[in-house]
Amino acid sequence: MNQFEGKVAVITGGASGFGKEFARIGAQLGMKLVLADVQEDALDTTVAEFKAQGAQVIGLRTDVSKAAEVQALADATMTAFGEVNLVFNNAGVGAGGLVWENTEKDWEWVLGVNLYGVVHGVRIFTPLMLEAAKKDPSFQGHIVNTASMAGLLNPPAMGVYNVSKHAVVALTETLYQDLSLVTDQVRCSVLCPYFVPTGISQSHRNRPAGLTNDAPPTRSQMVSQALSDKAVGSGKVSAADVGQLTFDAIRNESFYIYSHPQALATVRQRMEDIVSQRNPGDPFGDKSEVRASLVAALRG
Ligand SMILES: NC(=O)c1ccc[n+]([C@@H]2O[C@H](COP(=O)([O-])OP(=O)(O)OC[C@H]3O[C@@H](n4cnc5c(N)ncnc54)[C@H](O)[C@@H]3O)[C@@H](O)[C@H]2O)c1
Image (cartoon, rainbow, N blue to C red; front, side):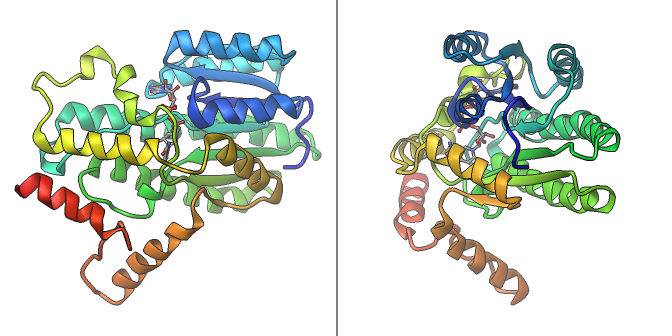
């Protein structure tokens, strides 16, 4: 996709972090924006901010884990702007800790947002784009699904998140294959960031009351939260950088988008472990101190 001006972008998780940066770049390129987020106050502030800059933007409070709300988002987009060209299935949340300690509510919340949010987005928006492509040979569409390096690696004490993000990589690789069977006008990419300062380590701020755990966090969950606060907070690549390289990838029709290509050495090691039938190595690669600190915190 290389035409952005006047085109329509739908962004889930659009009120913070990467989503807000996608919106910022979309607005600079003259796109019409539809921002969806479950956090209403942040959504209202973001919509007002871009409106004040002269962007055509609407916001819709949407819980992406709910099919009916994603359908309502698509309906609102079509009513407001009549088409959709670029979809960012980006909303996401995290829950950590040793995998056997995660509750059913942890699984339901994280898979609901990170996996089903993307499933609903793909299911509901792809047919709209394919229909537009059939009617208009000049139509261009693109879908970006936000996964993570945790969709290519399996770091310890973040199993629910890893599972959700591996599923997003699998879904998006399949989407790529399926789209290529039927069209050249609609493309897709999978975004796999490493640690970048955003609100992600505080994602419990938007955890629904019905999916909140009754018991206090376990020791491993507290250790994992502290690790995630530190790793996310100290990231050197910014959300704005990730926004820019994502739009570059959309322009270049690049499928895999990485914020930290240097982390791919560890992905290569994992792939080599798999094909050589070696037992899994350390997913933190040359940062062996991370694993050592987890062992010390959990066995000590
Ligand atoms: N920041 C990182 O280090 C990092 C690394 C890898 C992947 N990611 C992924 O990037 C994506 C964006 O996260 P971010 O880092 O910008 O964090 P963020 O918390 O700043 O933004 C996420 C947004 O999603 C919204 N959201 C949460 N639950 C929702 C729901 N049910 N429906 C709709 N919106 C919902 C939040 O309100 C928030 O505005 C996520 O999928 C996350 O997993 C982030």
